[in-house]
Length: 340
Image (cartoon, rainbow, N blue to C red; front, side, top):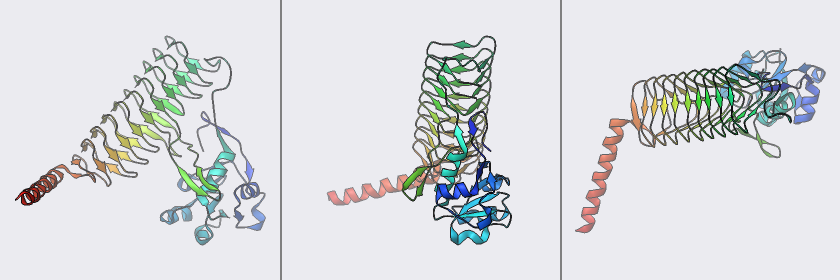
């Protein structure tokens, strides 16, 4: 279930109502009165939650799920266990999105004082003019919140942190000695959309951002909250300006990322990895401990620990340099032949 500090619980709701809301067909005619309290992914579902299957690669997770109900296409109905009610639809992921919006609502900053009466500020916190602190937020001793920064409801900021002017932090838990520079945005929804009966629909992002001790996040960088799992930035990692980190990414300790690096969703990065400027990583890739990604590289597959890769698509650095030199040599030969 989503963290109640950041999401309001709107359940329970009957499966009959969910079927009517999404246009799904109940797999059991007598299951309409059964209720669920929330949405969940298949591997973490409980009997009072509803999940979905949109990709047959996760069929094993469906067979083993404890979910009380699951949106599935009619062709995948056979994989739904007896303990789970099938909600049959041609667009399971879009139906799940509608169910998530019905059952969970993100908490927002309510009208009222700029610093909520329900916020918990320890001794020595400095709040600059124009900053906003939402209900239930906690800010540790010695932290400084810059002018016009926004600390959303339920956010935890550790001790001796520096939050720059105009930074926006929501759906996030920050450790001690974290620095968030001006204009950075932490915890906005990650990018996700699914095809529905009336076109594309946004997928609700129900996770959080966890920023561990000693992390620095540069100006105008963006770190998205998880789709359901958390986005995690490991201890003492240093992130430059204008870096994008998508949902569900897990960054290890003591990593460095230069400006314009882009990390796609569900990437796992080991400790001590380094990224040159404008490096890009495709989704679900694993970057090993101590790996180095050259500037402007486009990483499309896993990078083993300790290796240095470059180019696009990225490959081991020596191989990329040999290929680049060979291409230049062949191009020069053709040019010389054309000049004769």
